[in-house]
Amino acid sequence: MAPGAFHKARWRSNAIYTLKIWLFRNQFRLTAREENRLQDVCIYIVHIRVWYTAPIAACTPNNDLMFLQQLAGYKSISTVLSKVASSKFTGHLWYQNEVGSCWVGFL
Image (cartoon, rainbow, N blue to C red; front, side, top):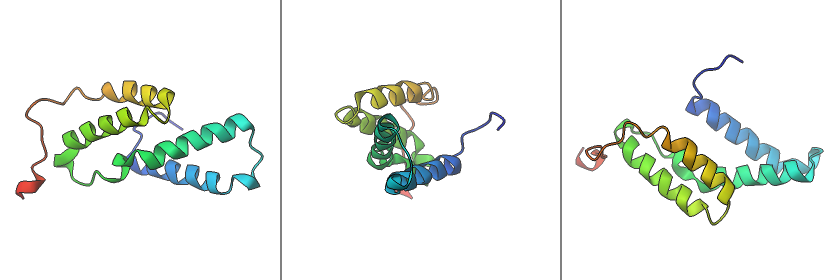
């Protein structure tokens, strides 16, 4: 596959397939390492809810901050995944400023 944007729809489809693999893991030959990693990813998908709660573009800055808060709380579950996701996501915060906020409450 050619490199390109990792669209939300593609992420969601991967998340759904990962959860399905976890549900039917007894029908696959998984090593203990693969099963542990799969479990970690499934817990991450379920715990970090921001993937499913971003329908309004004006709320993106607020959703990003909520995501960082959720990642901070996720450290108690998996320090490694929380650290990797936090470091990767902070590279995408170049557009954040003190003015950006969600005006949905005023609509």
